[in-house]
Length: 139
Image (tube, rainbow, N blue to C red):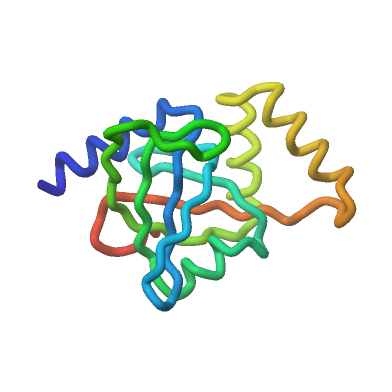
């Protein structure tokens, strides 16, 4: 079954948005729509370093992913793909995020990053969530 889970995970790379579910210490799920892209056999997500997703992943590396709309509406019958994620916070990863997401989402990504920099808090430092289908967090 791990091979089918890995195949299901890789197929999500073609989606524009996925609902990423992380888990609180209590086990309560928290879902957020995110951009997603492939990087080798892993999937990657970009998020601000201070986001709730990052805080929750420090306690539990499990994630569930399902295709969704920009607003987070999950498609009827969408099955959650179980995986594990690790937060990667270095300059090389940030450069990779810009390259991969800029290539996939093009102007939309650049406009979003520009608007984020103009926001009240200024530019937010971003980190990469590296997601794989293994039973341990991605390295």
